Length: 192
DNA sequence: CTTTGGATCGTCT
DNA sequence: GACGATCCAAAGG
Image (tube, rainbow, N blue to C red; front, side, top):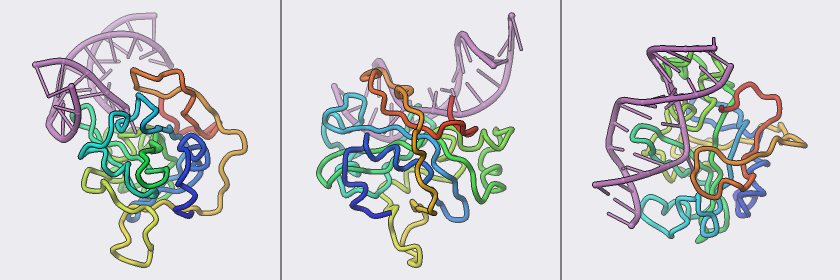
């Protein structure tokens, strides 16, 4: 996982992030569903109307975490993409839990089955403990460095699916026709 | 299984 | 002052 791999069109990068691993402390999960958000040319992107205090991270270097608050109670996490100065991001919509499942269950008492832990963008943030204080965190920091960040994006060797599922994005009111959502076909931990 | 409506507040107009 | 890249409980089939 190189930072330069992310300095490109998020629509191209999004399917390549499938099967990568998101790690937060002792909790981790495999990315099984994502959505791409282009910045200046995508009306559905928070960065469409230019830089604001909230969207500043998206205009920074790739490989950092963009966390936003929505519906008055939920956090969602994105991987910042594109070259510095150009806003772009990939929303992480669902994970397949790998480690730290007991901690995830404590964080999400509402989840009845294991697949309810991370099968949604706000659910996975709740399960992993990601909040606004993690906004801007470097996902590619040195794991050996304690200050390297508690949130990391790791390639454990599993390649992305050869033919991922592809469809329209969810929950947006504009630019709904773009098929910029990608998922691992046949996975149980997909949002709906 | 599906549908429906309520909760709740940071951000931008 | 309005609205949202959502989730959940409740109710009906």
